[in-house]
Image (cartoon, rainbow over all chains, first blue to last red; front, side):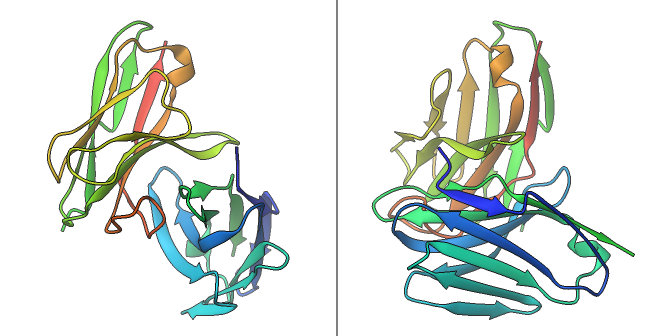
Length: 110
Length: 115
């Protein structure tokens, strides 16, 4: 069963635009993580936000976490063609294992 | 550093055949995991090993066995492959000791087709 669910399932934008994807989850968590997967490759960790943090930045990435709404968002600013990939949120429920969502497929066109 | 290395990258099996997927990490991580990825299902945990000598079931362990050979290596075995096991398998490792809640480092995947 999926703890985290991403929205939208697919997103198509032009280069230079911002991309926002969301993740909702069901139970209390220790942390929430975002991963990127390029086509045919393994997942790469992007950022981890702990349950007591509200916002975190890493380069062009901005992650927010709202534990009252059990949701997170990943913002990629000034998107590039190289950002084309699937993005997964992974939640670490308290006393349980890391669980991945089904992902958002991002297409950035020139 | 190679990170997490999986072999083979591709494999085609007939129903009932057995095979072992190999995984090795060179990051001195204690925890290692096997996931499967199917379209529309995300990643699902098959088995994990919090440390050398220990293994535990994940969400979808049926039809699989694992061996934590040493700190570096964690293998996944399909004793009698079924078409439902057609999937992409990922090995991952983590430096956390308390289970799979920390940052994971993934291999490139092993694409298995069972006919």
